[in-house]
Image (cartoon, rainbow, N blue to C red; front, top):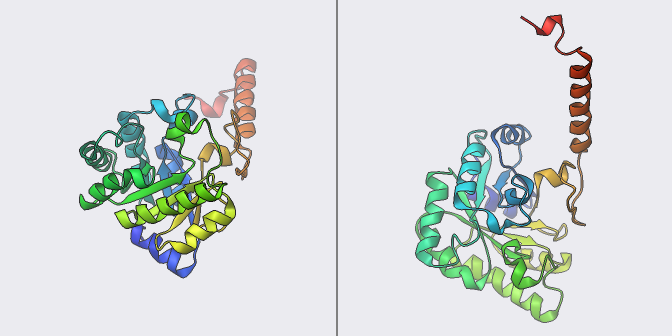
Length: 264
């Protein structure tokens, strides 16, 4: 059955945990669909994992649309969420609605995600009024790393925790269907989750959130440029791939591939 934002709300109400992974291509999306992952996030993390950028700030609308459309062709029931890239929503409410519309029309996204709390509530409200579901993202917001001074855990002081709670309540009031909590102390993330009616999706926010999200390459052991503390590697696919590539090279070099059965 097709999963929607209503499905995620019902899962929260029933106390069922929500699974979310990033994905950027058709073939991997098909595998995640088969595994019955609840939501796929076409994250602007593709800047790091797919395009080799130092951070997410160089990712464009065209990048997001292309990868989102590719993922959409590999899924049927999985809910598709797509990041709004840096500067696609910050300048004006009009830009935010127009670009959110492009992600839906051209990228086939079903939910758009944008970073920020109180300061982006006008954008969230306008996008929702355009009948596009929104996933908010507060706490550690990678598009703000220059202002934050790097990838730092948020909400550790009483004032910072109060601000994060205010942001969470504000994005809910603005109409967000769910919110990602990134890089937040576990106790605070649990308090936010209990306070909100909408689902919370944690990444580096402990187990008290309504769901979890990880970057595909991180949880598969395929990306070791930087491995955050909160990442659990569920497979060592990186080593498997290196071994397979090396075996291919060896057998090509030896002339044992292709063999007679693999030839016409």
